[in-house]
Length: 104
Image 1 (cartoon, helix red, strand yellow):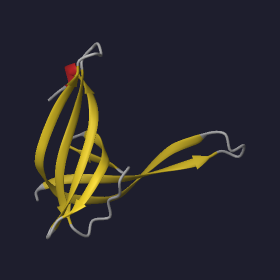
Image 2 (cartoon, rainbow, N blue to C red):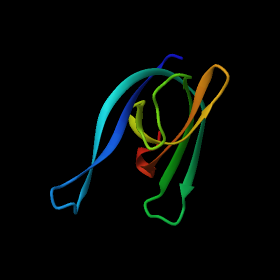
Image 3 (cartoon, rainbow, N blue to C red):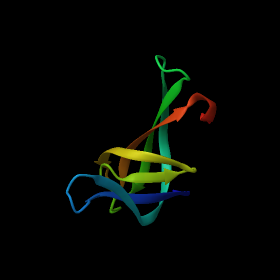
Image 4 (cartoon, one colour):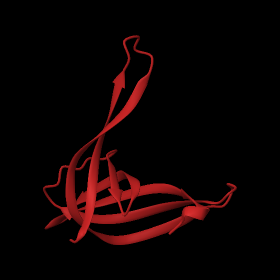
């Protein structure tokens, strides 16, 4: 566990007319993590090509990370879509979309 992971909790706030909900994110913690697996799929029907990057990340088991939180890893924001507890650590499945020219 030697990579730094920043976790942001995303909440919604409605205005006084109860019409709009603005997504507000606030940083809640920094964690040490390790990347278990990376998978990249292309959305071929879009121009320019957009890639969907999915990563499986290991974090401490007692980490306060929920589904729909955003995490910042290697300078890119990912959305947490699944969280599975393991014996000694927690496995997060995160995803993001990137343009073909930004793929690393």
